[in-house]
Image (cartoon, rainbow, N blue to C red; front, side):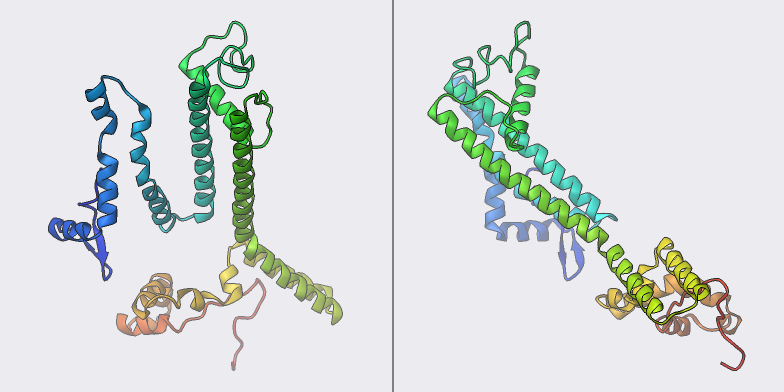
Amino acid sequence: CFVRSRTGYLDQGILVRDVQKVFKRYKKNRIEMWIDLIACLPFDYLFELGLQTTNPCLRFNRLIRLQRVFKFTNTTEMCVSKPNLYRIFCVCLYILILIHWNACFYYFISGVLGIDSNRWVYGKANLQALPEGTEDSLSRRYLYSYYWSTLMLSNVCEVPWPIRSSEFIIVCVDLMFGVLIFATIVGNVGSMIASSEAARRDFQSRIDNVKRFLRHRNVNKNLIQRINNWFDYIWQQNKQAILDGQDDLVLSVLPTKLQAEIAMHVHFETLRKVRLFQDCEAGLLGELVLKLKLQVFSPGDFVCRKGD
């Protein structure tokens, strides 16, 4: 799990798991190999063995593998059935991680500037962090730091005002990052909502166009009601792709063989029920299903008439 010398890869669409081939390919990618090796080095333990003390900052080398998280999320997004919900989850997760990092940075700066040195850093002088009678525990330090980070990145700023020049700089940088994060959240969420509602808006636009046409042509109310019922049925049955006639367009990116397999899966049982095709070979049915076009009829419509 520390290095990727045993992670399979796709070669012309075939998953390769042979250890020697995988390791040979892994060695060719020098950058990833060195990133993994450097990230695995236990600098904190080596520092402790040499100087008999620890420094958590020496673990920062593990962060250079952060890009693997983004690769994982991108790969997972291709597999999930509801990508929009997954994207929203990822955005929320990234925000929580950024707030956590900022909270850790705040407590680190408090330690550098001096715990309890003034009312901005963490300590008893900061009555918001440690009111009288409150125990100074590790959980209290983390919770207040996380609270401070959340307020700063959300631009609420209901925290003690900075005193030193360095504290003013930190607050300004935090506020700027908060503005960028807020803009990113609004942009991502807005894009996801717009994407999820695009089909509904297009469907409603078509309905409005049809209604305007019917009013302009003075169509009788009975026919208008039948048309409205048909639109309701189509949307409730989630048949937007049928209405758009985009089935062929959606599947056109796939090779013909996969298109045939999908069509067989969808229409094969229906063809089997037709007496005309019951004695036909599977190969012929496979060719026929590619030619089928699904049509939706509302109750009371004639599917066909004698002589058609």
